[in-house]
Amino acid sequence: MATTGRDYYELLGVGRDAGDGEIKKAFRKLARELHPDVSERPDAEDRFREVVEAYEVLSKSETRELYDRYGHAGLRGGGFTPGHVDFGNLSDLFSAFFGDDLFGGSVGRTRARGADIVAEVEIELVEAARGTTRQVPFEVAVPCARCGGGGAEPGTEIKTCATCGGTGRLQQVSRSVFGEFVRTQACPTCQGAGRIPDQLCTECDGAGRVIEERTLDVTIPPGIHDAQRIRLSGAGHAGMEGARSGDVYVQVRVRPDPRFVREGNDVFSTVDLTMTQAALGASVTVATLDGDEELEFEPGTQPGQIVVLRGRGMPVLQGFGRGDHRVLANVLVPRNLDEEQRRLLEDFERRAGDETYRAEEGFFQKLKSAFR
Ligand SMILES: [Zn+2]
Ligand SMILES: [Zn+2]
Image (cartoon, rainbow, N blue to C red; front, side, top):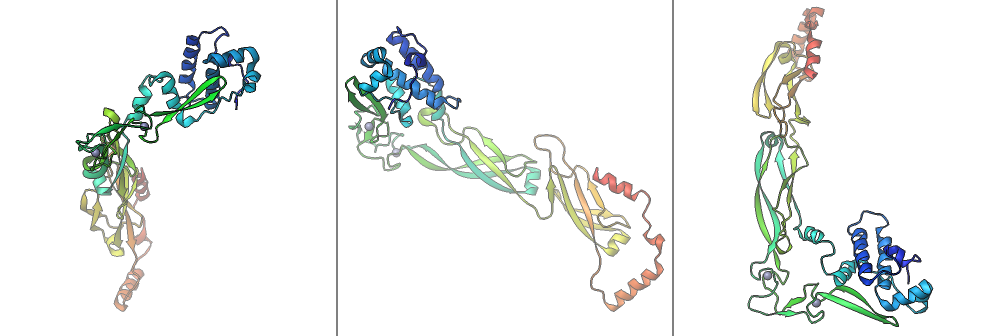
């Protein structure tokens, strides 16, 4: 079925008297621009089909003559059915037309690059604070050492594929009154390799690549955040025929630490003080990213009061300094009093007055500065 009613010469941007070489050149240029694997244009595929169709007709003298004389109607009348373009096989079609250099080789080389691998490690928050190293196991495809990547058992023959005769491509020829139209696709028997091992390599079953277990030492920098990735350039799967290997991306999971809440580079924690510790002042052990530490709480410490440990938070990733660690006092009010304790507190209450609870001057000032 013809897919376009547009003028074939116009589509290729050539004059009606253009020679075969000029038509081929114009088509090559357009094919490079419009190939759906390359072009960003949304209508690239449709434009591409039109251009392929135009080239099909104008590149053969029989169809070109017919088109010159009778236009599209002439072609239809003659039973010509262009436009059966299977996009899965287009690159093969182009290889057949032009050889493999259509895209200058650069696209092909990019495609042959080895695949990336994603691995994951989990670390503790305190390890993220210090930085750490981890051995990360992963599986990578490497060329099979037994067959050298050819897929044949050593000492056995590699035969030329009988289906495609070694070209790796199959040409499907349809005949019409105008001549032959050729479609090309990758050979299904040899998957385009052109050669088939007589006996498959026992190590890789003919795949030419084997999976190898590897371990990488990964250095995790201080201050890393949850879900950040570290890229290890070139450590991924082997590329085809010497092309560069893929990369390994190590996704770092920072396990939440029940003792700390992390916010950016700052950490928060709470510490329990008894009512009397808060009132009398106390030295209490608190957990920090650098280990346990004795912290002094002044007499009259209020619930929610915060002690700031400057520069004791998380390190700034790939920078200087550290965030802060803020320790929030949680004052425990006794819930279960025995007779004696109740009597003591009642006695205390009788002796206490406004003066007992008066805020120290500047306390709210201090509280505010703690949040800065
Ligand atoms: Zn092998
Ligand atoms: Zn074949």
